[in-house]
Amino acid sequence: MNGVHDLGGMDGHGPIAYEVDEPVFHAEWERRVFAMTIAMGFYGAWNIDSSRHARERTPAAEYLSSSYYEIWLGGLERLLDESGLLPRAETEARIAALRAQAG
Amino acid sequence: MPVLTATDAPALLRKGGSARVDADIPARFAPGDRVVVRNLNPRGHTRAPRYVRCKAGVIDRDHGVFIFPDTHAHGQGKNPQHVYSVRFSARDVWGDEAAPRDALYVDLWDDYLAPA
Image (tube, rainbow over all chains, first blue to last red; front, side):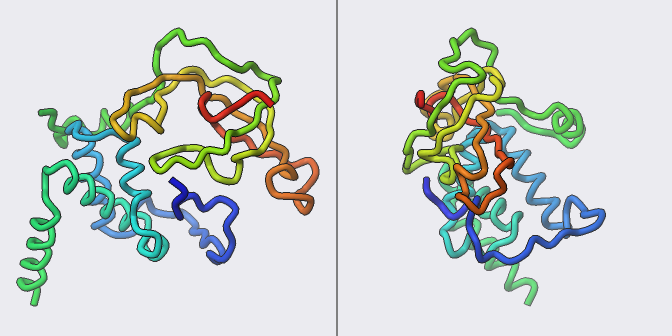
């Protein structure tokens, strides 16, 4: 697909921010998103190429305003929904419940 | 159903998952062959970047046989085929302002290419 993920040669995204000794993860939730994606991939309901494609299918405006692991989380939620393993309505309900709990 | 346990995870991550296929599939191109990237605009997944489509390059090396992502992403089979490192002159890709001696190498599947 001719999506916004295919960034090669595009201008207007600003300079690349280099970090000295860049950590693999910048927050604990990123570590968990990566682990969940690998663990669910091992389950065999999809493959690495369909997993990449799920991330590419992030709506264009959302893709460009999301961080790397936000895109990974969205891709995992999309695959879980499409495979029927975890319908989006259940994810949304859980988010709402946790939000209410957090106050 | 397969379950990945915390105990198994380190070994699995070290090993990684290769898309290489052990199959005797003939290569359509050999190093030195001139090729052009087809004008592909699939609605689905592809690993052919837009900036090399319709550009001419030269086969630099043959990596061997790999799963074809464009079909595999959609449950349409592994469709194993050769992947080549294709050399493009920077000027052919980015125009006359690119440095004359710069080049870029892009790994491309057999189905992306046509003889130039």
